[in-house]
Image 1 (cartoon, rainbow, N blue to C red):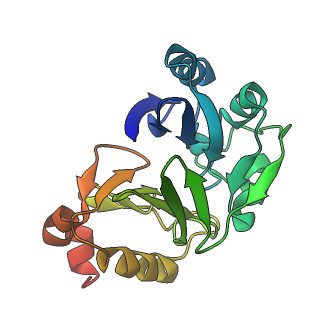
Image 2: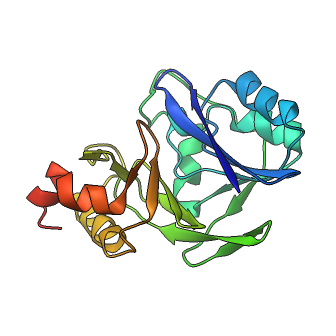
Length: 204
């Protein structure tokens, strides 16, 4: 499985394309739909799943175009569906139209992709419906955890208490798991356990 990272949208969100020889999984198409679609077409990849880690606009801006291109629904946790058409977001000046179908994600759900299974983990805190995706030793965690930082909990729908619980859960996972956050560079759980100052403050 190959992992391609595209920085998209006004906040340089990490859009991830997981691919095998023919199919792809797109995680967080947060803008620049032409760039994402162009990358898929260049590699002759057909999206099997389009996944949102959460509903903030900077992670979903290209949902509509990509859903139309792939003729696929968007997978998102049901507690974040309301964000897809609300102004309660990091980009409050935007009011998006939702012209696509959604499919609910659930804790413990497994999505079949190539020879791998994508495990859905409900990791609330940044939003009520934030999820992380674990596949082949790689964790795509949206705005839960960053290199040397953690996600914001001062937004509508955020919960510091839930964030702590979600981070505790992740920190107990295999330390060699690679972490692919919603913004910034990738990291490893081991590196964040050892070096992330926010985790130290939380006694994680």
